[in-house]
Length: 173
Image (tube, rainbow, N blue to C red; front, top):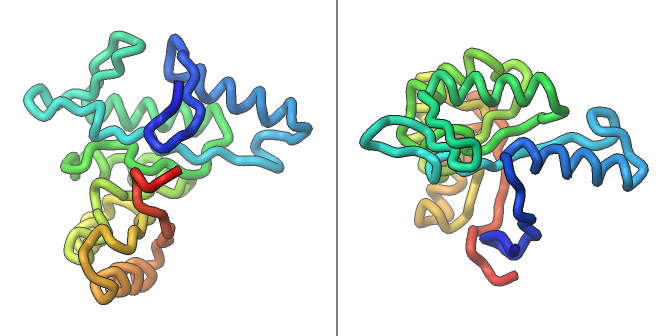
């Protein structure tokens, strides 16, 4: 029951149970969800995506969703729960899905591209021109050089987007 980076990962029957457990923990800690504490998600949707069928496989629920249905899924969650940020809510090459995601709920959520943008200034410029995110996850050694990382951050800021600085996945716990 240990997740990819050492986090607690309980066995749950459905994806929504994860949010419910978090909401319960917030309440038990004496806080109010949506007022004192908000939720940010990183569902790593590229791992759910089947490039052959072009469908997202929600195995726990036994569902396969199109890009449009995946966006609707996130919009419903963001409406129902105090979610303020979703990172990698769609697959890394589902550009049209990302555009729809921003169109539907980008005014309310921070929509963070990590796998989509990989700290790459060219991919960031493409996303800006397509309105396919509104935030970029910045990983210093993901693109290859400090100069390119700084260019990625500057490009992001010039567009009025947020840049979320991150550690590298898979580092020591």
